[in-house]
Image 1: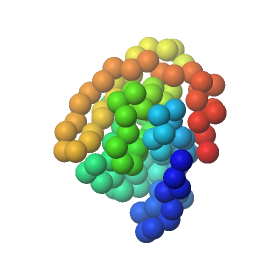
Image 2: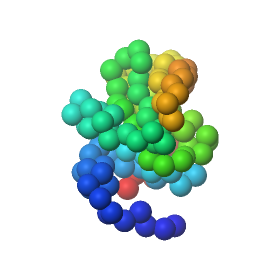
Image 3: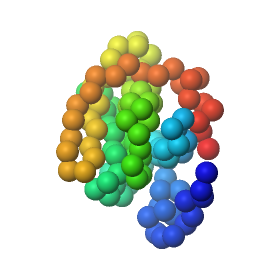
Length: 121
C-alpha cells in the first residue's frame, strides 16, 4: 500500500484530528471524537471526499478522503452508528452520507466496536 505522505496542511490537520481507521477495502477513515473534531472534519471535507454523520442522535462526523469503495462507505456508516450516544441498544441509526455534492440518508445498525478495533491505526 502506498503511503499517503504529508503533502500539505490538510493532511497534517487530518492527522492531528480524531481516531484513524484503515477500512478493509483500503480507505482511510477519520472519526471525530468530540464537537471540535466533528467541525474540523466537516470543514476539511473536499468535494470528492465522503462525509458521514449521525442525523438523529449525538455522534461523530467521519471523513473518508478520496474515493472509498461502496463497501467501505457502508462499513464507515456502521462505525458512525457505533460511536453515537445510543449505540448500545442495537437499534438502527439514521446517518447522512455526503459526497460530490449529493447527500443521502441511510438507516444503519451499529457495528460492534470489537469488530473494528483491528482497523485502528
